[in-house]
Length: 112
Image (spheres, rainbow, N blue to C red):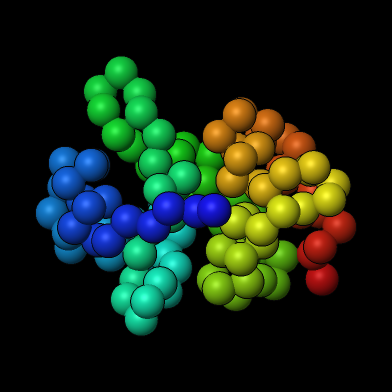
């Protein structure tokens, strides 16, 4: 089950103003999910590095690849957060385990 963060919670973790979360959504650095009628960030989109919490670095390129393949933002988000047989897990979990190539290879046949 995915944990969802409010804009304020995500902003606090990243050390930025909540308005920056809107920019990160627009720039495809984070996923946006409508949860209980309000926009949220899936907690799996954030990882810790030596400086603190940051957006998962491989997420942006993956989102853009899905958009280029004809997905809408909602469809791309759903695909990344849903179990995919060819990966044997959710793409977000593969990305967090640094299986970037596997995720992006799974996208190629979806292009139209």
